[in-house]
Length: 117
Image (tube, rainbow, N blue to C red):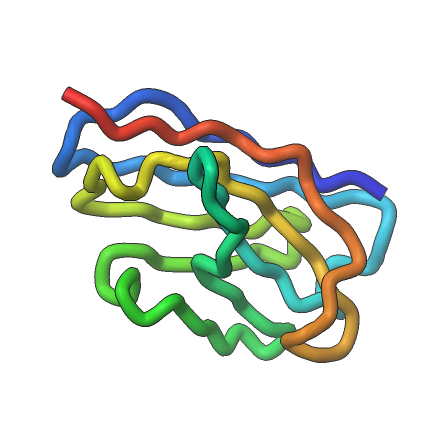
């Protein structure tokens, strides 16, 4: 099983990035997919998730700036991040869970996002 994130990097405040998470080794379409992030010295927190029916959820403060989507034909989940702020700086992790929102079975290795001028 692998979850491989990509698309992170350095961006200026107000900019955009699109993260991708390519999955392999399990039946992607049957898993809830989530994005988490962890800033230095802070806990890992949920950013967004999308279930097998395409229904998504967001951390309250991020809705409207971040958009989660999935392409089951490519076994990939995406996180479009717009109007980025320095507070969005963190390592972003992809996670997969079978069956329900609360379960996590697999984690990716993370991708760094740095928002700075």
